[in-house]
Image 1 (cartoon, helix red, strand yellow):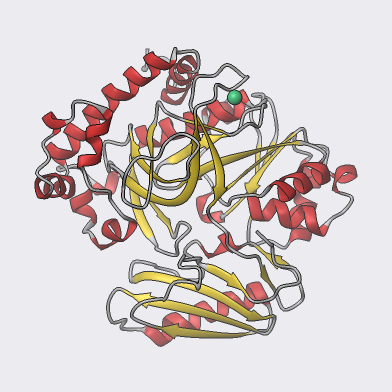
Image 2 (cartoon, rainbow, N blue to C red):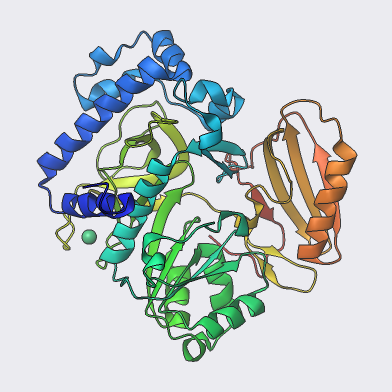
Length: 435
Ligand SMILES: [Zn+2]
């Protein structure tokens, strides 16, 4: 069957079927995938073999979902410090894999690896959510994203002349983005939450200019007033998606907007309290995820920085995927260029550095429209530091206009006063987003 139809469509078909499973059958499916993933990681991934051994955990000890907590969490800093070869299944040809780089929400740059099978599966997971929310295969979609993430080849649908896409760079000004959207006349707009918010805030009469039916947002948490503003300015229904580049789409809103459906058939999401214990329904917990599909670079009990509330409600839509609600999470401020343009904090994925392999963590602080401070904690001494700084300054000047950029190299970047870490902070109050 796989040989006859493209792999992505095959996955999509199976994933859509899962939406109608009984909760107990969904749990069973998840259990089988979990056991296989944990066993595979122990037997074939050096990092996890060591980790499990260190915790005196053997995959045979996994008898119930609760047993999973015997495995310590995997942090971003651990993955970052680890030799990539140790994180990957033994005997894998690294050249055949696609590298993904991200700073995530914590300013910790990371590289993860996927093969074609994982890319197709993750694409299918995304398509399932978008189709369920009303996307049609003939729809034209404008996608505002980092140009480095633009797909290099056409999808199955595009080869059939369907699903036309216009990719718009997040580095373009809001005026340019709007002009490109107007020219393309998309049925659907998809983008980083902050980019959509900036468009909504800058242009009061968007409704007359863009006639889209749906808007999909992601990458940053949106509060209710921001969601309302985007939806009303675009004159379209807004669906927010919760994703990370390491594990793909994790959860998404359905038309009921009563929370986010967790893709329980592709990820096992745990919610843990401060002591590492599982929190009860209705209580806040930090998100810890185990990917159930990527066998090239599995992530088991991978700790994200988001806090959600798992809820035990059945969604009125009838889908059995469990629900979570957001309470807090990624909360980076918007940045402001010298001429007053708002700039998305998500630009600082690995931007402005060419390579991020040497960076342990970074933070951007906008002190005023005239001054930007970039704090960098390097992993080790940097050889060509002055060249790196010069190149980064040039990029920042292109984007922000004429403002002073100061680099501060430090061993460790201190947490905020609140005890959290935000990678982008603005000290300009008037137009920064108040969340
Ligand atoms: Zn629902």
